[in-house]
Image 1 (cartoon, rainbow, N blue to C red):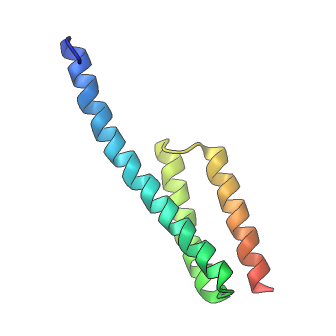
Image 2: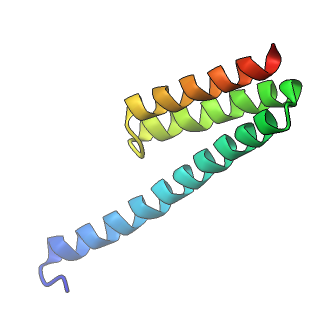
Amino acid sequence: MAITKTAKRQIRVSTRKRVFNDTLRRTMKEAVKVVRKDVIAKDSKTAQKDLSLAFKALDKAAKRGTIKKGQADRKKSRLAKAVAKVAK
């Protein structure tokens, strides 16, 4: 349990950040799942449209620091590769 004033403040701040990060992470994961589902269904038009939404979610999460930039780049690369296979 926090005793000092600054420790109590840090708990409040970390709670706010956790909520924000959880929201970003959930949005990112859902966007990636939608693209993966489109790839499995071999629906290239929908996959292309959903890919841009997934890129946006990944970039936002990386910009905010929820995930690292390299992780976002890796996920974007793998999603784009999967969608490209379906488009062929």
